Length: 258
Image 1 (tube, rainbow, N blue to C red):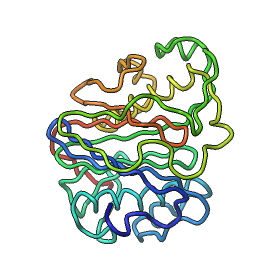
Image 2: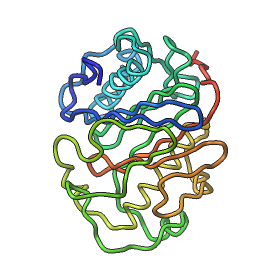
Image 3: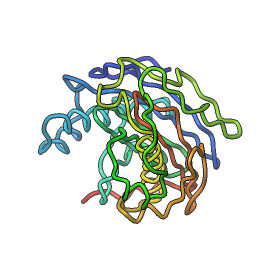
Image 4: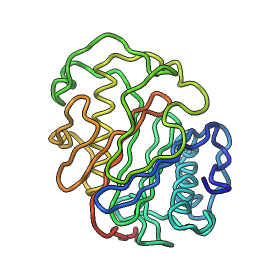
């Protein structure tokens, strides 16, 4: 892991993962933002001027973390990486347009991915109570027995595809999950895991999030799959949150917000 990769304002050391698939190389960093956010880039401060509280901390921490992911791929300093927003709000790296980036956050947990040779989407989601009707609509089995998502959680081995490699710890890093995530039903956990896959695919493909994403099939327990030209992978959970990555071969679209 490159020196200085861990930004200030994170209470957990980010996890570095490398994945090679569909001719692409990705670096995903995971962390948790609490308290004072890391020193912010002027572009980030302008983008966050209307944000407050946790939303602001998550936004600034996510931007700081994705810069380090880009730096890990390019070998440049994180301080030289410039991230702005596309017309649809998704982040784009204008200092290295050949690198695609994606950021996700949920309850203070942050996931940031940089990728070369593809569009990319990353998503993590804290499990929350979900009604039976919604579970059925998305093809998730009904409520099941409670399962713990704290220190003992394991949801299968990390994805390995072709020459993929992975460095860094693969399970929980840093402080234990919040009490709210310490116990969820099997159905809630599966819904959150499947939703991260759908959101990651939508980000990689440039689709809008919403009810229409339920058409993306995510078989229960599947660790990887493909849909609409995107290849998706479930990553090891981070502090009680399922994490998913999707890549779509092609040159990143650097359309910017006017």
